[in-house]
Image (cartoon, rainbow, N blue to C red; front, side):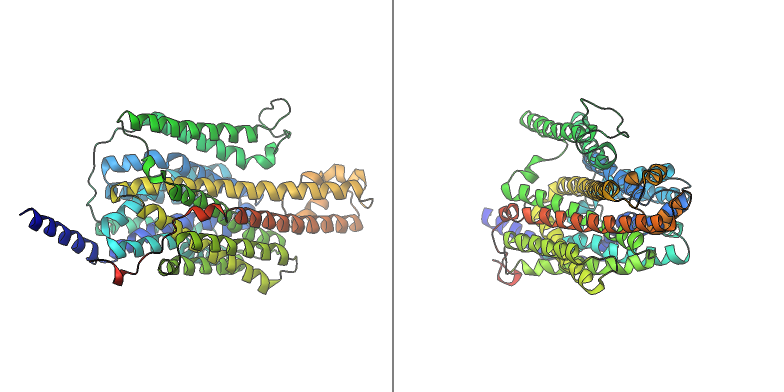
Length: 546
């Protein structure tokens, strides 16, 4: 009797693993992921058009992007627990509705402040959606089909970037940047209509939300994001005039990062204490308890930060340095996104031949080579073929890492911890997005300032009376046309204007090249930590034991 019962359980488990569910639910899940990607990608590809419409600098749009990522990273952990309380499908509907409202506010924004408010709302919605999408995949699919579904979910950002840059670039050029956000509001409405295709298997369950842990984690993430995003304006070490306060002539930016890291460590210690007492924790620490899981999480952070920096710098280069529009920017970023999408889908098959540790190391090497090629080949005359090749190489490595690392985390934890895996991955990914964009901005502006300042000190062609009128050493990353407009209101002669434009052109190029080389160095430093990923080679499904 016992043997028969056990055999029946095994047969039931195998049937559950091999059953094929319709892909309709996955279409809804992927579209929700793409909707969130469209939001940020539209900001990236349309940054110059938005800046011109709102009368602000292009780099200011980076602050809007950082705001969204900051809110998501700060709220995603309690968002996962709230989803557990009220049910995954109900959370999906509520979050999609809120996201749609935020897109309406974006389309109606008349200044940067209202745009930031809209991104706060969008970030709140995304904080609930990110872990919920992982739960919905676990609820709707099993076995090999679940692995395929996770691959598509991991590839969705790359797919979304391709579509967003094409669609947003076209609409921005022909209609205006507001039209894209209006379409996103319509997409949210459509997802609400088709949300009944999602499984309601994950029922609401009682849980004690750890609000102290939420405060520690949320404040820690906010401080890290604020510190990194203001490194350029407040100072990397010594305080600049824009710093809100000064402590012993030091910038508050690195201090905020230090306090934020301390609070995150306090959150981990607090969670361990609650776990030992048998109380509910904000996130199950088991999902990152092993060496491989921690290596995967670190790798997710590194590759997400690098990817966000790339997708911020390339549009900045195309629009500001080259003076191209949003559609040309979209075409230029496609090589990176298409290569990322292909690698994200195909890497699942590669795991039948190589271990995650080997794939991770080779992928980081690809990212390193691609970024080094970008730094070496970018010119003010746009060396088209080599830049595209460098972007494709970096994108291929990034896409492979996205799906690989996602699968490592999901397969290492039981299905009931899917929300925890989603929330941990989401915190790491969105915090990395904020840090990557902020550090890229700080690095490129810092290098630009230093290069321009050096020229002003050693260039006799620009007298003090001219530089005093325009304060060139504090000019942000701007196009030559905008610089000429500023200089037109000064006493500068045509020769002095030409020299100032030359300084701006050379300084921007040097800052971009150095930034890409620095990112390549970061990718290379991840080579050995990636070796801590699992060393096994997954057996093909056909040879799996019965």
